[in-house]
Length: 226
Image 1 (cartoon, rainbow, N blue to C red):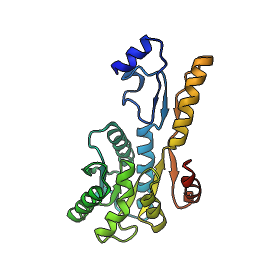
Image 2 (image 1 turned 30 degrees about the vertical axis):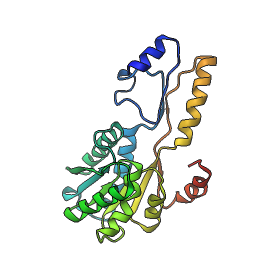
Image 3 (image 1 turned 60 degrees about the vertical axis):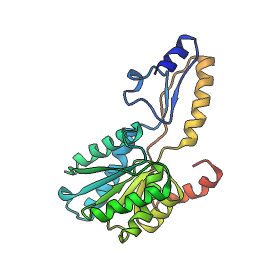
Image 4 (image 1 turned 90 degrees about the vertical axis):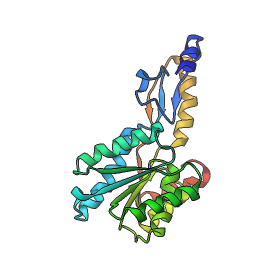
């Protein structure tokens, strides 16, 4: 927070992108934020997977939600999990675990997710709180002997393993925070701020990717747009 405040005193425009302070401008003096509203995004993915189960006639009063995260305590995971729990309240869900997935190394993440699933057969949903943990959900479910739809998966970002999970039915949906827009609008915002004094807040997230919308992602992902 202090480097941002110091820069503003010197007349340097500072904006945030990709990850905001959980308190917004009250917690950090940045002039604007370009990125995903993490709590809203968590609510969206939670509501989607919970509604899917409800439509299947599952008893959600006994549901258990596993939420693996790469870095426990990191803001993105904490706020997204709050959004998921917000959605869970609407479905009477009260049982949650946040899983320490061990960092950013994919084999470690897969190993920890698999171990958790084997040790917790009561798991109804597994919702990754970050891109890497979501990417490994499909492999972990397969390792644990689960069939598509037996445990409903969901999460964030559009990594290759996540797209495979969508195709195969292990992942119900994922949230694309549309990082291309974050980078584009961050640069353009600073230009407009300098030239015209505009100070916009732009929510780039909340694009729900599922089997109906995955085609566009597959087309644009190799072009580094999605």
